[in-house]
Image (cartoon, rainbow, N blue to C red; front, side):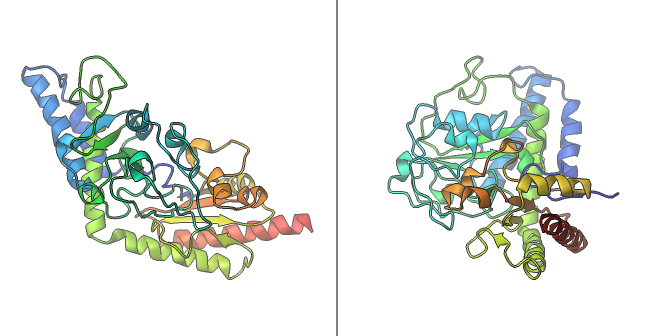
Length: 347
């Protein structure tokens, strides 16, 4: 059975450009902090990747602090700041914030004090895109970067979190991008790497892959690859809506990521759907990968006002540039058949 991967918001397949850059970096033996030739060669790999990430993100190279993940970047950005946020943020962010801000039924957030708040660019479960205010202190841009046009300098955001494995890079490497003049207090002390803001010998191989993936992702955006993906998402939703009249597509009348469908089907638990679809050869999820397997309704959806039982029926389908119309139509056909089987059992 040929499997179809439709869980790109959890992690993306490794791009060939990233694989090639990582393989080349494996042969660079020096420590980037060493001053000899081998060390300078390793430092060159890191700085080239830093420039690639910065260029793709609309930032300057010295704005980019490499971390082990966007989760670590969130800690570096948020620790000790007393920021306000919402329950639609990823756990990596909401764990650091006072989540008292309101979310409307469309998944949108309006901030009264951006300088003391966090707000994601796009939600990993629903794909809903936020309008970011100027002077926002922190934004989690991991889901948007690589799928929609992002320009850090123009955004006015003071700090942004990004991650390699959401745009075709390797797992285990992320970055905090910091606007000049914004203070960052190092959370990991040691040798003073990353301009004194994040100590520890740099993950040269992962960083090389991140840089190559970011550059390739920017090329995809310029080639309008994601417009084709958005058309596939719309085909999927139209195909299912025609036969499953009570299925709700979250955020389908507001701006969303081009690849994301979050669908709620009353009476059919999301985890049950995910298992049935996995057996049928499809990889999808019931929400954020980091909360997958936890028996609870999505707090993103309940924050938007959906009842817990309905929120618990959610599944997320997230596509990538390699997804085809055949993949989408096969998924819709199998999902609808599984829905009919589920309802026949309940009858």
